[in-house]
Length: 319
Ligand SMILES: [Zn+2]
Image (cartoon, rainbow, N blue to C red; front, side, top):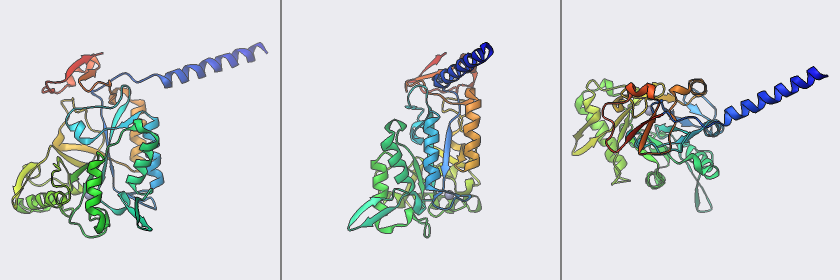
């Protein structure tokens, strides 16, 4: 009887300890890595390049529950981490402007966002959890054939791009019609990029496109063709080039951060599960915000990993 009591007490103490450990906020680690997630189709059924609306919703719930908060790609590029203290920024990206990413439903003259399209799922989730933040970047194809041309509702394509920008989402270049940039010479590469931008800017003229997601992750023969230049009277300049794979991205404050080679994690079941588990185990590798966009809080032992050219307006704090 006494033994049983001791066992029960031990179990209670273990449970209490476990719950305290789980509730402990993570210490800031702003040299940890960040996940830039890459979605393609959001539709049914689940396939290699398709996430169902249900699974996308579950991804958001899992990310939220595990302490991730949405951060925009542009903010990350600027080294402006704004998520609350103790949470981890995560960047959402959507490639190829397929219809399930952003669909309008029309009935009785009323247009509304399809709650099962990615934008609908995301907006509903944010409405329920406003502290998740609101951010995602859409790498759209303005000149692709159906169904990948600007979400495949021609009558609404301009409205959708304007709505995304007004709502705080970001647009990125993915070339005019998904050209494999490794296959072409300079003139075609530059024309694909410049026209992609110009066709987006027909709908959102003042919008500056800062990032290019490389179709198939393939670089042109000369990276400079993708970074900046002009074609047909249209000038472009990118702060970032995004790949289609490569794992978690270095912290924007780390020497390893290279915005011209930003790796991404494909948001499919296996990859997501792998990286979520990875960052549960490897806390030292996980970016955790200090809650103050003006300071960079790092473990003292990792100072050597800081980039040499930390922006002047940011102060480094060791913990
Ligand atoms: Zn693509």
